[in-house]
Length: 328
Image (cartoon, rainbow, N blue to C red):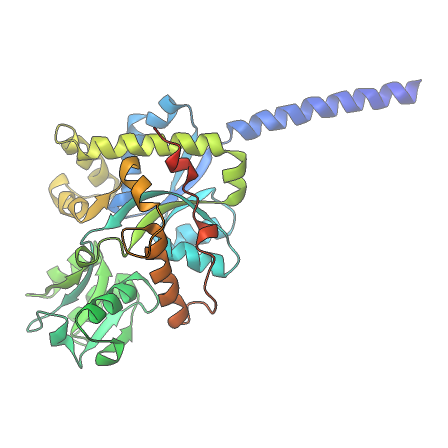
């Protein structure tokens, strides 16, 4: 009798503890990594406005340098991270699966090939050295631009340089041009008089999509919460794009990175934010840049060709459009 009663008491206590743990798990904030890119700093508007709380979802946005955010996601310290679509494939190649459930934006001019005088076109760079971080998105942008101009990578000499160091590389005189995204591209143009973009992501809209990539476990366990995150994102884009509220939104975003609104507005203009209505179209399968699937296939081909990883990735397995498609 005593043994039976004791076991029953332990069992009852165990069930109570499990119920408590389940409740605690449900209350655990969604840990989301974001970094210094206008399409991701946009989240700051929703954070400061308290829109997540209003939507009934608890979030913990954590600020990182971009590569550090991916490291944190890969280490299981985040439930989701803001990444480029191409970088989600790089993660997948190393066994770190993430699911692209929503689009934040595509680069619309913020990624650039910047050349010093007298070079004014990509074709004028034939035979010249270009500083670029090999295997990253600016490398992809350069190759896409060269192809559009009837050239190839063999027509230039690549000098491998980290993106945040490219302004100094251009200023050193060691190269004729560099590939960088903002704010590094803008810094390069300030450091080198007369330097200007000769090709940008505005020439290839949709080549570089930015997404929210979620761990499969979190997506399965917290699907309803991720639906609410997408709802908040849609509200955020509307607020930023509305002429009546854009100034307030830009002030919030600029404050996050220590710039004035006047300095920040051009960076926002080089980023095409994607609301739910547009995302539903981009999530449709296709082979061109107007489809996340087509754009990701181009990134996948690039990554394999440049030995970022060996084998093509399962693009369909990295994309789940259903949460966006279910939005009103």
